[in-house]
Length: 368
Ligand code: ADP
Ligand code: MG
Image (cartoon, rainbow, N blue to C red; front, side):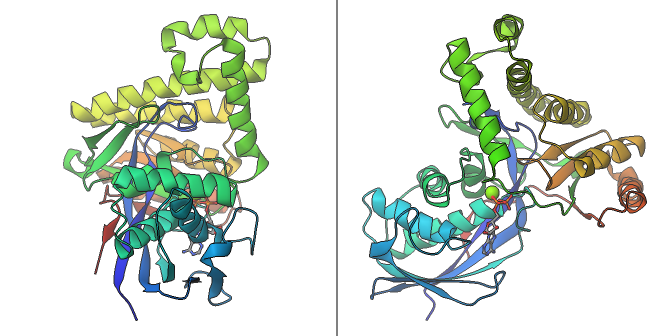
């Protein structure tokens, strides 16, 4: 029996990468691609989870046994973790049947994990009448991913999936969680924003991501600030002088300049100066490649080949080490840019990338 159907989208981060665990600024937008959850309550205290994207059939867990580090590890940790986070926060909820079907490619830097969590949270919130608002659900989804899955991610992905609106990016200050929709309609300016999934798969919960995060936190301690967010562009030269370790200096330089780029991109979007966004995307990529060191040869090749083919700007998006890049191009040149990236990948003997035009779409919602 089905009681309802809910959908939560993946997201593209336009700019503001590796800033969300530094109390910084981000500017994601929702994709039309969603995780759809078909759900119903159960009265026997069982959480039954099934995903059309995962072989192996349904997994049944007892809700009273849910605890970080217990039970099977794997994809079910995301929805089970959301149930656990809701219960741990004091909400009363019983078992459920949850069936997922996803069009968000997993591990592509498009946040399939947050889409899975937010679809689960929205379904359980409605089924059990918990009355939580979107930002509140996003916080509990992050808690599930941090504490139950064990991935030290920031708040961007869950907030984007839960709170984005169609035709807009979401300017999010990850310190005070204030949000502002910013119009994003490249098509109206004769521009196209391409997403290029390199199909190189990363693992966020892996050591590299955690290592960058720990490096940022150590640099903030060394500089005597609560978070790197507190170093503005004016304070950057002094901060760099005070850090003896060149790797720490590079991390700080990325975070400080990236926060400033988010502001500049938001300003350009508000004033309708969309082409000015291009070079800022490319600057972000250079900073992520050289200072933060989270790119990879495939992502670099997307950026280089698209720029040579006339794109206005390009950068990796998401955590890095694979996944996706975005490319801003004039719409008349989009086909040539697509062909150039495909041909560069073929010449390098990389797997063919998956390329599509992104449209800022609506956030999580109930479908039925
Ligand atoms: P991203 O969020 O960038 O896609 P992550 O590594 O954070 O990458 O999350 C990917 C993981 O999320 C997958 O390995 C899988 O465990 C889980 N996942 C995502 N989508 C689904 C789905 N439709 N069904 C089951 N598990 C999924
Ligand atoms: Mg993820």
